[in-house]
Length: 611
Image 1 (cartoon, rainbow, N blue to C red):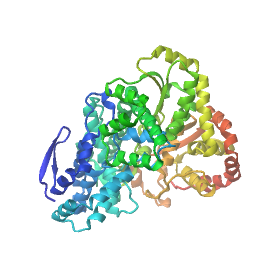
Image 2 (image 1 turned 180 degrees about the vertical axis):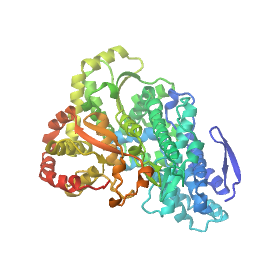
Image 3 (image 1 turned 120 degrees about the vertical axis):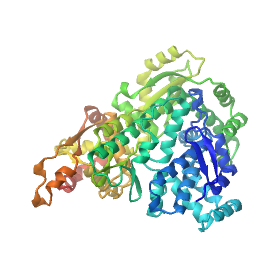
Image 4 (image 1 turned 90 degrees about the vertical axis):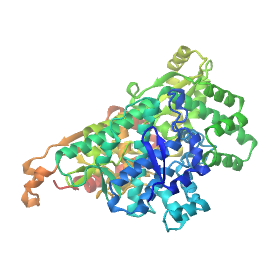
């Protein structure tokens, strides 16, 4: 693979390109990314945040190539070109204003179909269609790639977006470099966004990561290949912790900055008013065609002009204020450290069902008639749920090796906030007093909306809480610590298979035991919210644990680390919450009660591990 030219970059200094990459960059589909800001409207808070998806895509390609360099002896040059192209094109299907519009469309459930709420499908389609262009076919041929253009770029799209089902083990590994637990995409935007916002919170450096990554089958993991020394294990764990802390600070300092949230809400409301007006004057198909343009054609300015040309007067006013740097004022913010567990869960359910927020907003404004209130909710997302670190001659979950990482995960997942905004010319103190005065009514409005949605469809997080509630009510707190929470995974999978419309977790055996990253995250959420008490302890080993009759060698004592164990208990607030929602889940609870004894015998009494 011959590198032909270079582009200067403020983060990586110079990014080298092949002729094929240069051909793709020159296409209109990629040039569009120059006009889509990486952080949406964040420049109203951070003036330097004017960098684009274009330069981030180049940076992701560059980092992906540096990671690949560590494994080049296991692959060929075609694999190298694949990983570079996947990094380069991974964001090509992003909407104008990126994640802001995706979040906004989630709040407009009646207007926007689910396909408009994630950009990955658009990315795959755009990448696949690049293979139809004659100039791309010619460049591919010149690069020495003999595979058919269409199938080659379809494969690139799957690698770029983490759609691994149709990929070979080699390509799955390449995909983990772009879209994994510690990947080129995240590394670049953490460094790049920190640079451009001036929030230099990064707790790791790129060279340190590159020096400490290795391959475990189809996954990128942390830890030097072939090293077994305890110091190298500590370095691996510390690097995982630093990466987790960096993501925490990134979201709390930049993404969830109150003014950034306010600016996002302004754009979302302006778009909502515009689409509602368009729906009144056009057919649903015409509206959908317009929405498709957000991902295929529009850049940031196109979207603003769309609102200005087709929006209501209120929508136009919001865009004018946003363009002029005037954002909503935060009149009241409910932070995780200052609210009760039930409100924390309400915020989490609002984040999972954002279409409820607009209805809550309407009801709140009926109570607070003197001022116009806008509501926004935030959450910290994207924790690395399956991040593995090298321990001795194997790889294990970071959270099973680091109490700090496990505790920090709960801190991150429980840090959602609920914001109340008013327009800039409103009396902020007056709004604040009105919200405080009417808080009980506002809380009841949120609760009733959630109750109404619960009747239509069960909340998975509540089903999980009720599982713990019923199991612990019958058998008491878990007296024997559980390694890897494995028994919980097996119980929940059994319920999912045997009780219709309960859970929808995806389970795998990728780690030689049953695991679900989404279930792990939800368990930790319940702990972070405060409805479920989770005790995380390290169980010390003893020489007596290594009995030759059990096929243990005394050498194992020196080679193995201690294990982290989990214990659970329903918090008093969790008990009260479960008693409140019991009436909505009576059939489910009856099913659990009937099968509790078999759970206890099948998954808890019968030991899964012999230590």
